[in-house]
Each structure stands twice: as C-alpha cells, then as structure tokens.
Amino acid sequence: MEKTFDKVWEKCLNIIKDNINYQSFKTWFEPIKPVKLDSNVLTIQVPSQFFYEWLEEHYITLLRTTIKKELGTEGRLEYSIIMDNSSNNANPYTIKMPTSNKKAIKNPSVSMPIDLNKGNVKEIPNPFIIPGLQKIKVQSQLIESYSFENFIEGDCNRLARSAGYAVANNPGKTAFNPLLLYSGVGLGKTHLAHAIGIQVKNNFPEKTVLYVQSEQFMHQFTDAVRNNNQNDLIHFYQMIDVLIVDDIQFFAGKEGRRNPEYFLPGFQSPSPERKTAGHYIR
Image (cartoon, rainbow, N blue to C red; front, side, top):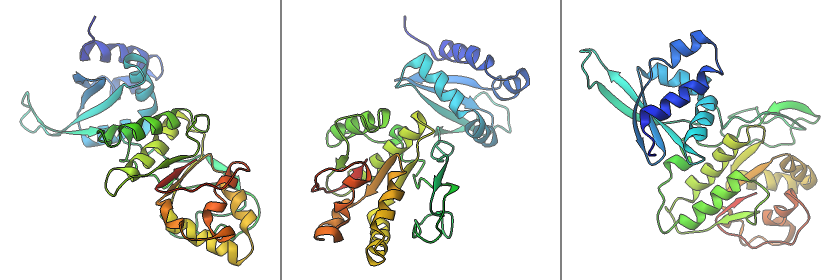
C-alpha cells in the first residue's frame, strides 16, 4: 500500500503526542499541515519563520526520529514556511527550507588540557596555552547547510558519497578508516566532508567531531614542533572521536617528522605512514 503524506503525518503525530505534553503539542504541532511526500521527503507547512526556528531548536531530534520510524532511514523532513498570508488566501506565499543542523553540530563537553574557547571560535587556537584538565566545549566547525540532504549526487561522486554515508553511520568501524577523498576542484569534497561530520552528530550526539582546515592544522603542528610538544598535539587529537582534515594534499613535500602526515595515523593507533591527498576523515 502506497504511503500518502497525510497518513504518514498522522502516524507521526500519534508518536509525537506520546512524547511531549498536551499544551506543547497543541501549540506547536496541531497548526502544522502536511503538503507533500516525494521520495521519502515529507514536506510540512508551518505558519511562520519563527515557528520553523522553534521546531528546529526544540523538537528537531523528535521530528527526525519520528520521520525515520515512518519512512525508514532515508526519510527526511522539509518545511514549507508561510512568509505572507495577509489576505488569508488558500495559497499563501511560502518558501521551502530543509531541516537545519544547528543543534546537531554542537559537541558535548569534554575534559581536555586546553582552552579552545579563547579568541575567534572560527579558528583553532594553539592547544598548549592553558595547561590542566577542564570541561570545555570543542567547536565542531561544521557548516550546518553542508548536509547529505543538500548534497548533489552524480556519477562523479556517487561512490564517495556511499562510502561517506557508511562512515557516518558507523564511524571507526568500516573499511574506510581513514577515509580519503580525492578529486578535482569543485566536485563537492568539502561539502561531503561536512556532511559526514553532520551525519555523525545526528546519529551519535555524544561523539566529538572536529573539522579543521589543513592550514589551521599546520599552524598547530608548526608550534608543536617548535616547542617540542608533538605528544601534546597527539594527545589532544586523540580525544576527538571523528577528525576531518580539509585539503590534506598541502602536507605533501614535507619530510619525516616535520610532515603532519607522519602524526595522523598516531591520532588513532600506531600504524604505517600513509600517502594521502584530498580530505582525511578519521
């Protein structure tokens, strides 16, 4: 029997109703109208931008879990947001928005011998400024819009996407560990790398994910070599559950212990040196 958008949403509401209080359900879910079901993507219409943002901030985990329960692991949610309904007509002006990943990309607090919260959060500061263990939050540096939902799949990247999706659903336990992404410019390596990190956070919120550009990593690595603190650098990155290094090809040309590539395998376990290019995801 083919599923229809209204029947799927009705089943979703029955699950949601059992997981939140009556007033919240009446306020935030009764006004929602299902409008379309296409290729396991359920589109729901919400009354305003604020309504959309509130759902994303407070109920996105419940919504995602419910959608996947009804539509399977490939099930996704999309919003149709009413932007202008001044005339109360049957076809108000709306815009489409996918689910965001603002909440998902936040890492839990972890015990680390550094303070990453100093300075600009877009940068990864020197991890050796403040000694001693303390509970801090590591900024994942993931871009929330670079998700699998927004990734354009084609013949050129289908294999890479499949491998990335497998890694995201079972990090550290697939044959792709590390996963190296290599291609020409503009074919989606960075988007796919972020998508893997976001999917890991969606599937395993307790894991700490870190995306770092090779240039940022090189600054840390150079400081570590200069100060003879390579072991501290390794210990820091060993606390990261999923490490994503962008543009790793820029490590090429460095020799011996002055090549950051020498240390990447040590971040997880002793292993032979690897020749790599593109993006490194561990």
